[in-house]
Each structure stands twice: as C-alpha cells, then as structure tokens.
Length: 84
Image (cartoon, rainbow, N blue to C red; front, side, top):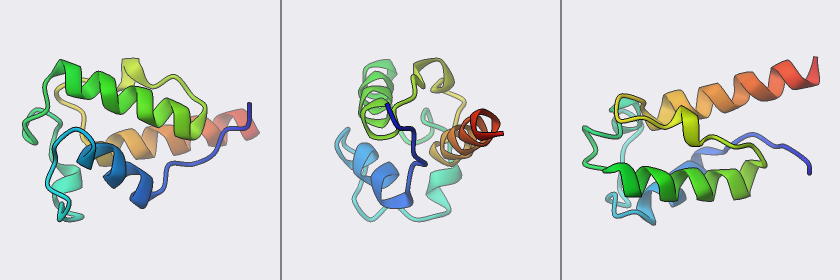
C-alpha cells in the first residue's frame, strides 16, 4: 500500500464526519480532540478514516490530548522516516 501525507482538506473532512463544525479554523486544529468535544468513539472513527486515506495505522496516535494538527505532523514525520 502506498502511504501519502494527510492534507488539510482530508483532515477537515475526517473531523466534519464526526460532528465537528465544517468551518473549523486553522487555530482550532491545534486544539486537542478533547477540547473539540470528540470522545473515544469519534477518535476511533477519525483514526479509521485517516488510515484509509494515508495507509498508516494511527489509532495509537489519537488520544484525548492530541490535536488534529499534531496527528497530521506525526503522520508526516512517520512518512519521512520510512522514506529515508
């Protein structure tokens, strides 16, 4: 399976699918999943959607204290490490 970075559009789409306001701002992407009101089931749904998009298992990277932006950076870092 080919791994690819998670775009802002894909990240927002995964969040909106779990009930986050479609108008989520860049600043709000730095808030934690807990601050965004996402429970463990919503985080699991996001993990599944992101895994389908980028081809990486990210479930262990999505905790209540993780932000969507931190998740995106973590994916980019993992991809860079595997490419090196």
